[in-house]
Image (cartoon, rainbow, N blue to C red; front, side, top):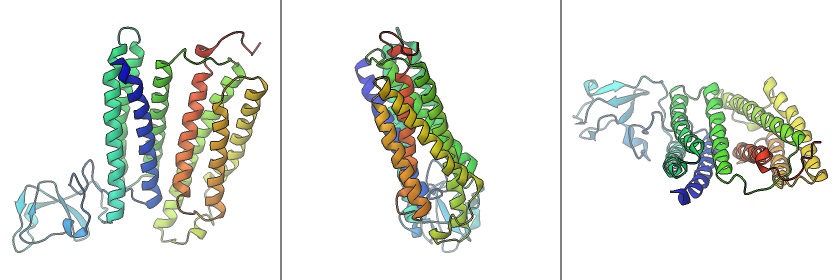
Length: 345
């Protein structure tokens, strides 16, 4: 099973990132409530493509749990039955998780694809955990970490359900996003631990410490950015359809998020200089700088060019990739990779 472990771990990491991309698309299109229930979608394993499917019709068979929108509310079939010529309330129970009762085929299928990506990522994480038993005798920590990923994927799915039940509560969305990054970090650590000793880097205490600080700052930026995004959602929900007006009166989080980006940039420029000056050999610092500049660029586009299409999703995805690369840097900077005399003398 060992031979399958690393390929499955790498595939799991890619798929978790795919879920983040799909989630960004959900946020960008406002499709978070495209499926008002969980894990099914309007009570279907394959969601409807037309509102007619979730409306009451005479002489139509509904299976237990399938939903309709009736009187601006969601109703769930109590059992499998065929409708009569007139609507009979006795066959239905009102859905009480929330009072959201709208259908938009585009939103429904965007959210459904997001859930499919999550399910696929979960399957690969489970396969990775099963394959990890090949390391049980010599590296039990690797096995336990792999099964922790499976547990966290299940927890993440539950968080997704609570986000839907809360009708996109901002705090729960933020926790959902942070948990995705925790899973990314854990899988990266698993991959690195499985390959420990195959890379040689110079150890420098200052570089290691500052990369950790840079990662924390990136995580803070992600949280602040999620809060700014929630403010934008509130503007849209308030009926402000003109994107030119969304940031006319922003919250304090927007200003902190914008100003904080300069701190992040300066710190990473110094890390880039330190890596070059001391010849530490961390080539990923180049990727950090590229990703950071792209992140700032998409932020500028949103703030000053009024949210061009795709900029919000790109901003989130780039931040997630940046987080992953920075976390890899921290792992590479560990003494596990030390060879020769330390440079922090």
